[in-house]
Image (cartoon, rainbow, N blue to C red):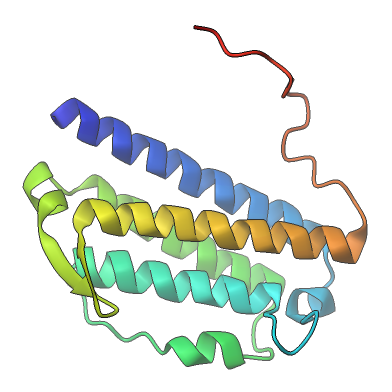
Amino acid sequence: MEKIKKEFIRDCVRHLNEYTKRVKICLDMLSEEQVWQKPNEASNSIANLMLHLCGNMTQYVLSSLGSRADLRERDKEFSAKGGFTKEQLFEKLSGVVHSVIEEIQIHDEESLLKTRTVQGFEKSGIAIILHITEHYSYHTGQIALLTKLMTNEDLEFYKGMDLNAKNRV
């Protein structure tokens, strides 16, 4: 079981780092104004999505798994209309991701199986890590789409890779 835990954590960490790199690629292609631009009132800006990711990962991992106070103010993540440069947003996001990675790597099997209440949901440590990994993926996809719509550019996430390679059995 320890081997499975290590592989699960290792893969989640790899994905978290990959999503952070993709967000950085997007930010580097955008102006300060574009980062805060909403496509419409029913949607969020890239900056709002980044603030939301920070809040979500902090609440789920640093507060719940890490037993720190839950100080999240979720509505402010979406109502913000400025206050951070894209560099500050990236520093905030990458700092949270770094702290999250440190936190998830220290938990043993017992801790990962323990159920906690987070954001009103009952989740095991494993479910919490799975949630923040898939949630980060989901919003990274939104950030990528918004970037493509604003720049009309290929993001080159897979530059130099042969994505037509066949599976080896």
